[in-house]
Length: 508
Image (cartoon, rainbow, N blue to C red; front, side):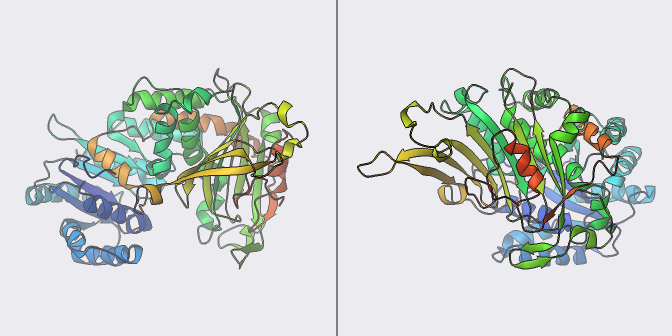
């Protein structure tokens, strides 16, 4: 975020689920960073709502303790500024009386901090209560806008658990709010490298002319985690890796990598192109679900030197669970730019490395000049966009090794946000919260975008209702995933970029 960026306008941020982990670990540190960056208005306040019994002073104290655990170098004046603007309201999300209390509190906070009657409601809650909170806000008149006062609602993922539930949630939400008031958030889109995809593709004459089927061999998108399910077994049993990661995180990366150039960077232009891209994904048929999708589940193993029990031994997980903790997919696009170019997606838990990245593999140069060099020895040309743990870009290409012989070697040109821009750590939420305060919906999902994503994965969910046919392949914790995922690419004469960053994936 540039220092010269404009400050957001006056508003109150109302956080439902303010006593939860999301608020402590991500939202409050993001707000603190926005304050440090000079992007929060002086006319700003926070109202937290949760079931926990506490007062405003305890609310501030608890969040201050969590923030200091997140950052050892807190500037106390900035934290004091933020804490003085925090208020707490105890209430049940389904209780109309809680919304009446909120309606009475907000004007008092407006008057105290001159916030202008602009309210941003953040639903940091379990997804089961999204529709309830929005309906109650509507009944209380709290989302009614005027010419001078706006009302916006941020909804966390997951937005639905399948196509039908996503459509139903959209229906209930749009019965209360206009689309322009809804900000469906995916924190991956707050990462600098993700946003930089737009600049790479459309702001550089080097890359955009090559960004098509004539020059690109294939694309890999990876989101790998080292952690297991831990104590989220109840949630994960009902969700699995496909629902948890693919329709949101991975498809958002996919759209930014593969969409057509928008007519401009206005929110609706960008979001329309993203939806068109998802509509162009070739539908999964029964055979595709069997051959082009891999389900895996981690077994016992070792991650970073520590032993890990199998998924089925985690709390609240069935001992014979068929829930996948890993999924890999091969997608094909029915459009002019990407026809014939496979796009491979993978995500999983309890893997060898924590790594999120996009790999653009360019086609090999003709072999005529290097006929004596085995094909596998020729350096592949990769553009690698690193999302985490380090944000940056690597370009791999071949160069002559010094000496009298004509020998090729690998060369990497690396760009790191931290080194080049002296970037400070962020949660990924700073940009998204700031954009919502400005009313910029570019990085947020629209209703048709949500449904287009679920439309792609719904045939897989349907195919997996046959428990025997959908039995996941077991892979050791601490590995690169199931061998079947390696075979998925090997059939096409390709291989995954290894999680340790080496050229060829090590078989599981």
